[in-house]
Amino acid sequence: MTATEEEIAQAARLLEQGQLVAIPTETVYGLAADADNPQAVAAIFAAKGRPSNHPLIVHVAHGADLSHWAVDIPPLAKQLIAAFWPGPLTLILKRAPGVTAIITGGQESVGLRCPAHPLAQALLQRLRQGQGGVAAPSANRFGRVSPTTAQHVIDEFGAPGVGPIAQVLDGGACAVGIESTIVDLTRLATHGPVLLRPGQISTQQIERVLGGSLALADQAAPRVSGSLDAHYAPHTPLALIDAGQCADTVATLAAKHRQVVSLCIHAEVPGATRMPADAEAYAHALYAQLRRLDQAGADLILVEQPPASPEWQGINDRLRRAAFDSAGVLQRLLEASV
Ligand code: TXA
Ligand code: MG
Image 1 (cartoon, rainbow, N blue to C red):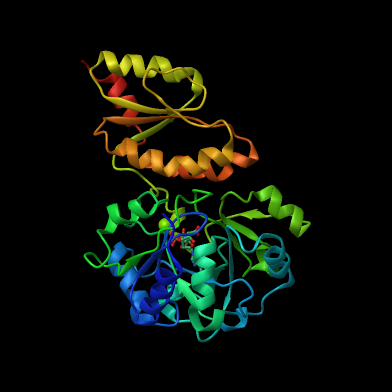
Image 2 (cartoon, rainbow, N blue to C red):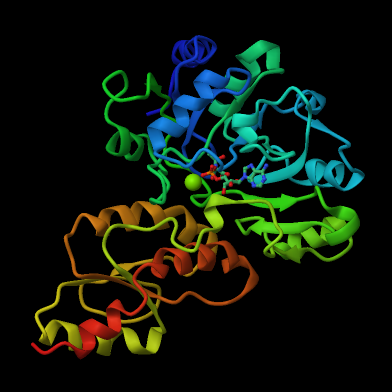
């Protein structure tokens, strides 16, 4: 189902009143509050259970005046904006003095993104004649898999009006399916542009526009909660293994009466959920499948390791983090006696 004009107008009113509204974007659903209202933004942290020093991305309308949010915007930012906005790219820039510290996590930078989803754009165009912004993290509880449908948001937070969210704008399943690529442009003189989080827009695509290389995040990089190792994780332990080992591993675990569910691209495993061999289609399906498999009450979610080529960069990053907390679980299950 797709939200109506009236629902979009209602969402804009609720945001202006300081309420939380879940919104579709092309990446994942966001839990939005008026970025100019610190109390409303504080309610996002309470709802998610997110530590207050983790900064939020501000989402702006196409064509919005960025000087309300950022200062000293470098020419490289303008090149990336021209190439990828509206779209799944977040830029970290020097924050303008008026941006509330609760959005920036007390840092001197601000994350800005102009989402491509038509409902998100329609909503943003209505906020202060297109000059407002919404602070929105992914609409999941802290550390969990991001939602890619309106129903996922309701599963996380309860129905609108019952839980902390006043309204959920339904924009269908998110086209991209994994969170935006994040590039830090605040330390150009010392570090150049830095990739903080890979996404569908790859390092190579960004480098082509920049005409130079993109550094990888280092210890000095600004905090990105998505860069905590254990993040984006289902409750069920998850293990990544090479295609060639999937079938044998599942057979060994079945013989030990372990319940295993699996996500495979090529591997022939009985009962496996078949994933697309195309990276974009895989990303689109990934979080919905992880949520579904997490419901199975299995001992393990086994995921066939996708290819290492550039278009899989964002997917491999999320799978590696999803598996982080369960390092060693597969080995223990394999070594356990029946
Ligand atoms: O695709 C997306 O980016 C989705 C949709 C809703 O737009 N949003 C999203 O938000 O993934 P969230 O909060 O779950 O992840 C945003 C990441 C966090 O890891 C946060 O730390 C980082 O962006 N971030 C935000 N502002 C930042 C800043 N000023 N400096 C460094 N990192 C920042
Ligand atoms: Mg998130």
